[in-house]
Length: 288
Image (tube, rainbow, N blue to C red; front, side):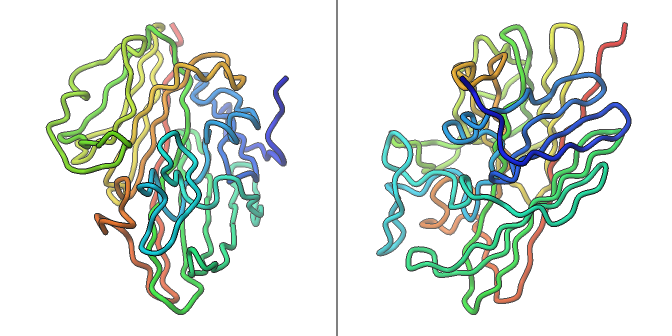
């Protein structure tokens, strides 16, 4: 038995519909131009598969959970610290209109991460699609390391096709930790979802991700240049968590795995400083 996420709010713009939960400000449903871009997300999919969570203050992994003298809890198969500190936190709904909602979480300083942040997510639905703004503000005194990613799973079928526009892909070690870059051989041409097995990070992006379904309908995922990286993961198993079909995780992210240790494209927020950037989704239905 599956459960709905808590405290969902619904957004509408024309016939477009979105739902967002207070649990990690997760996007729990998205329909644009009659295309179900994100099927109804269950609470189990959020808690066990990170569906649509906000991954902050780091995206992806910290190797072995180790950052200097700090040991974050390992929460993947390799003992890495995965997807930050707010993926299981209740955000506050601070603003809500018919077509928009803003959520906020006050991350307090701890011994492990001694920085105080206000982390935000705003969802704006219009006739063209959905725009998501992630934000962060350093409320403390020290310079705070920061990175963020989205983690939505897009509804997909085995005969759907996927195009990824990137020049480089991450080289990972045996623990899925980024150690370098190589040519993006896994992002060439239109890819048939049923034949894919991806858990890969791409960069030097040259365009959007486009999902084309067998009926000709399309879903496009775009991201601001501030999101220099794109994680793509094939969730062939997602029916286990209540999804009607498999899912394709398309994850705009600001830095690669283990950036807390490598400083690669890590954002450093000065006291009082703020950061924000957008990603979003459009879709075009088949109306023939």
